[in-house]
Image (cartoon, rainbow, N blue to C red; front, side, top):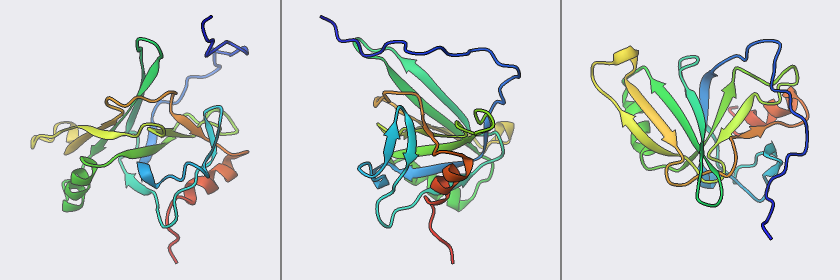
Length: 193
């Protein structure tokens, strides 16, 4: 007898009264994959309501031009079990030593990324924040750069799942309401006195 891993259990409305707002707001939050305390993080049905980092570890914000980060999540059909490729493309518009140093680190790092979506999932803002690479991590897959700065882009960075796949679409970060969710996000950064 075959194991039933997924059954349709509820109705879903695919129509909308207005067009969805495309894009990601200007910042991408990056976390070192191993800095997440997975024992204290709470996830239910692909929604993270508690995101806990290990003691002394923090998230880092990469500020981008508004709408320049682009997220993708593509179905990767396997022989037995489907999986997902998570991809995040970030454009850097400035050539600085800090950016060059960051790219060198990104080329060796395993990360999780949090994006702030422009389409927030209605008045409750339930899908404002999504997390890419939570299960398998993201790596810098491409850094295609030329000195002609086409499209005003100095560095074009593509973070993605690579050979490691995710079991789900990007995780949603949400806890009861927008204010509680914002506390989760703000709690990822160091307190500045």
